[in-house]
Image (cartoon, rainbow, N blue to C red; front, side, top):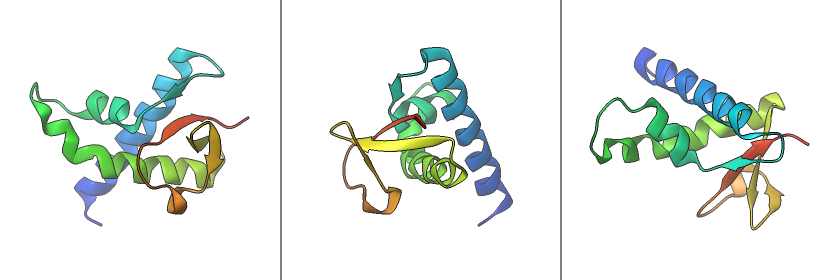
Length: 90
């Protein structure tokens, strides 16, 4: 992993936590919310940050800060396929 990738990953982790803090204790966000928050352009370049955002969420799961859900149920990051939501650990 390059320094730029690590820096982007940290920014995405921070964005995930900040977005969840702003939305309340039971709220969820989509990884795209974090990708859009970190991307500094005005086009759809944020889409390139979707996988890095999912990986950032996975690291936050490992740290015990968030959970990843699908259809309202908690899933392990490595098992998640398709759309996911991120919420604070309950």
